[in-house]
Structures are given as structure tokens and as C-alpha cells.
Length: 126
Image 1 (cartoon, rainbow, N blue to C red):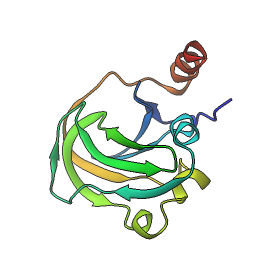
Image 2: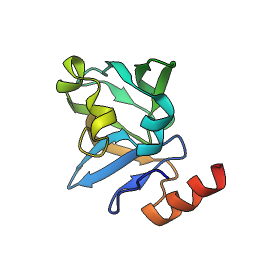
Image 3: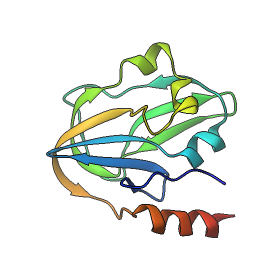
Image 4: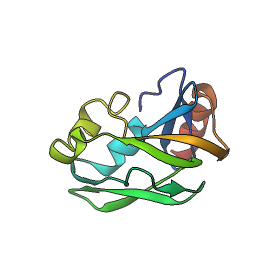
């Protein structure tokens, strides 16, 4: 079964969100990276880009497919994880340390689940 990290919030589209003061980090859940398979490329968003809840803000290419990454919050991209450009496999090795981007000026958030609720959601998906 996929690992779910406590202290993070999760979207039904399998992104995680970590709140730190006024900034949120966004990444892929363990379930998402398992479903994708070996990640070979990450198309990162642009710093300064304004993104809405439910909008695709980047895509991840794996040996299986190209998948849009959906934003669980609305805000502005303030930082990107440049390491993913050269080492996209980091998403497979440690998805909870390998955030994709950080956003600030958060204006809205989608329906996010805590870890326990996300675990139940995953169990229902099987």
C-alpha cells in the first residue's frame, strides 16, 4: 500500500500540500508516483505564474504516460524545484521530500484531505 505522510494535506488528484507560514509546497503523493512509474521528465511551472484551483500547472512524463499535475490551491508560483529538471527520478525516490513548486499569495484551496482521510480515500480506490 502507498505511504501517506502525516502533517500534509492531499487532493483527490493525488498531489500533497505542505503549509509553512504563507507558503505552500506542492508535490506528488506516493500513490501518484507509483501509478506513473519511472519519471523521466518534469515540465516545471514558471516563477510568477498565477494558478487557479484545479488548473494543470505542470506535467510529469514517465515511461508509461504524460500526466498533468493539478493545483490543489490558487496562488502564485514563488519557487520551483530546479533539481527535478536534471533529476526527475527524485519524485520516485522520495516523493515527500521532492516538492515540485512552492506557491504564495494563496487565494483559495480545493477540497483537501488530511492523512487519515486520504488513506481511506485510497482504500476506496482499490
